Amino acid sequence: MGPLLPTLLLILAGILVGGAWSLYRQDAPRGAIVVTGLLAVLATVGGVLWLLPGEG
Image (cartoon, rainbow, N blue to C red; front, side, top):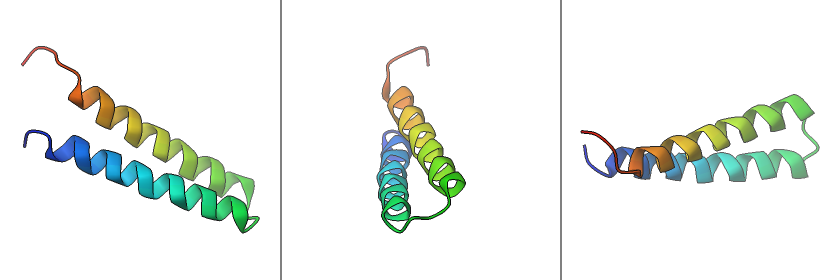
């Protein structure tokens, strides 16, 4: 799988950040913005951690 999955996670994170910003600009409910933002953070952290060297 190599670098494909972390790349996809980082792309997903970018899309989610854009979605959170769009929700914010549209005055969407705060819960939707927070959930979208948290998913973006999780995708970013997952993608970065996957790229870090380690065992295996």
